[in-house]
Amino acid sequence: MERSTSRILTTHTGSLPRPRELTRLYALRASGEVVDTGEIARSGDQAVRDVVHRQHAAGIDVGNNGEQQRDSFFLYLKHRLSGLGGHWERPSRADVDRYPEFRRMFMASHATRTEVSAFAGLPKAIGEVRYLDPEAIASECRHFRGVLAATPGAFAEAFMTAPSPGILAMAVRNEYYDTLEAWLAALGTALTVEYQAIAAHGFLLQIDAPDLALERHVTFKDRPVTDFVAFVETVVATINRAIAGIPRERVRLHVCWGNSETPHDCDVPLKDILPALLKAEVGGLVLPFANPRHAHEFRCFERFPLARDQVLVAGVIDSLTNFVEHPEVVADRLERIAAVIGDPTRVIAGTDCGFDTLAGWGRVAPDVVWAKLASLTEGARLASRRLFA
Image (tube, rainbow, N blue to C red; front, top):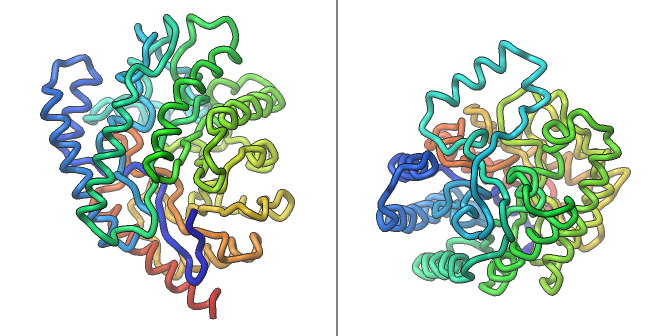
């Protein structure tokens, strides 16, 4: 994993705006409509080429394929795993439940959008879950590698994402396995195929694990925080088994409280879960510190420091607002975070979450996304002048 040896490097959290037509195709398919798979493939392939060029132009150092060939950060696995079927609806979020007027506004805003839903139409586990064809992830990796070969010097390093077994275990209702532990173990085994393939193709692996914070106010909203921390520890142990054999410096773990503009006042504090997160055998953590609810929590690393071989990808750009952060604001955030970590070479500038985690879900206009990433780059330059003087 590249470090900020002479300047603060820049990255983001994975998903980037998809073209409008590609989003429409994904939304139609998710709603059960028959769509031309060839058209989706062609549109996705071209979108990867475009998004690599846009990242390079914005000055991103550690970039990816923008998840353009997937309809969401985890639901794409409906097409890659066996044993899934039926439909169910996820429990509502505690922070949305407590504000009925906001809940009506929130649900109405999503009802009118062309998007892949995070609420309805989610699958259930009704049989043994296995990864069906390793060629699915291998071809995605090869395509991205080919795009990078045609764009020499685009990135200092490239990464690809795959979901945590925990987010799948919570979003896909288990009606087959006897225990949560067995369900997580089966998902961990299946996801090992993706984890290993991404590493084998020379990419950093980013594991997207919103479950390690988000599920406190969804599945565990009526249970003690100790029960939730136990869940986090179980998922982290499952991840560690799934990435065994991949050098820890080749893996980063993204944790967040859900990529939605909701009150978030039921979020579990970072201090309650950070000790469990630090048990992950990864080279870096990717955490959000730009949004108004968690901007202060970088200070948790004073009490619970990273291991000496780990880096922090610090979210200093909010992925849910169309405000373009001033570069000086970005620089100030990075400088404060570097002071707590104690070494600017172990800090990378990033975004709080993805900008389009499910196709059509993003709240930030695409042209504003690129302005925000350009501001991220400029802010990292300003911070670097001060931190590496």
